[in-house]
Length: 206
Length: 206
DNA sequence: TAGATTGTTAATCGATTAACAATC
DNA sequence: TAGATTGTTAATCGATTAACAATC
Image (cartoon, rainbow over the protein chains, first blue to last red):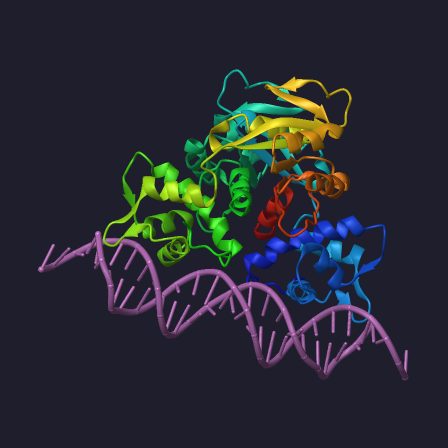
């Protein structure tokens, strides 16, 4: 039972997946890890690691550190990834195609169960076992399968419109690959994958 | 001449690409934009937009706002993207394939000029006009073509090793798609594209 | 000129870190 | 038990925001 009361800031949440990823690397090779180790690998301070984790419970043991298996379990529960999330992918152009490929390794607990597009050429096809359906079936599909998460790979000019539709159909989380800001109502989560912005951050320093 | 003396924090830099992207959307439709508009679209405050921009110069006019074309130019200069950056892509599995597709639209000032892989099946092929070369030619290629940026799409277990090599060969900026932390020396920039972490941030709130 | 909005200062807010008592 | 490391408090640091004089 996390003691998080939504007082936890988003910046703390954004570090949890990093802790989890690092812990998984050590899984098997040893049993416990101390805050300083975790911190050094990720470039944080030991105090910050302990502070972040302490927001959700007391997972460590004084003098010993954190049990890796146990902390992984706890983080998976906090992040709600101790199950498989079924997602839909909207748009099957260059980007969408790449995304579908990316998620073929389903180890991560996220699975694309259907693609949607408006191109009649694509509709009805099946790629890597995932069917491509027409956009106008999205509403029914989302509702019938209780889909909460959508991956957006449509042209930037369409992104906001499509997002609005999806939210209307019941989608609560959107991961968009369109380099376009999307405004979402309270209670809907949006995350951006924007390699160009990342590259621009790199070139600034070169 | 930016008055930035490396006192500018990375968090400010990370917002510049967002400002730029938003400005480009408005390009054509109007001549000027005020800080409040820019802020509202991105979910910031007007004060923050003005403060961020003021770190680099006085780009606005009291009573008028910012000339969009001019501000775009300035941001492009600050971010050093008023030219085309030639990049190499390391690894041509599922992920690498998707990445190559992604950068086929070369409007953004970033271009993949060569792919490198170790798979003999792939080496020698050419995809979308981009040749796939053996890893052992990377050093010469990087040095001959003065490549500064590499996209990394190798298995997580290889990421650190390959990054070390690339840095040794002269690479100064790495955008990695591997879900693995990479330690780089001072002066080398690293950015992570990690959709799984982004999804985990989403599921936390669901 | 009057109105609007910038650039910047000072105040506030929040996040990070240092330090240490608690305890494994 | 002695040594190590946690969880947490208090101090510090840095980022955001409010407010306003300067000025287009």
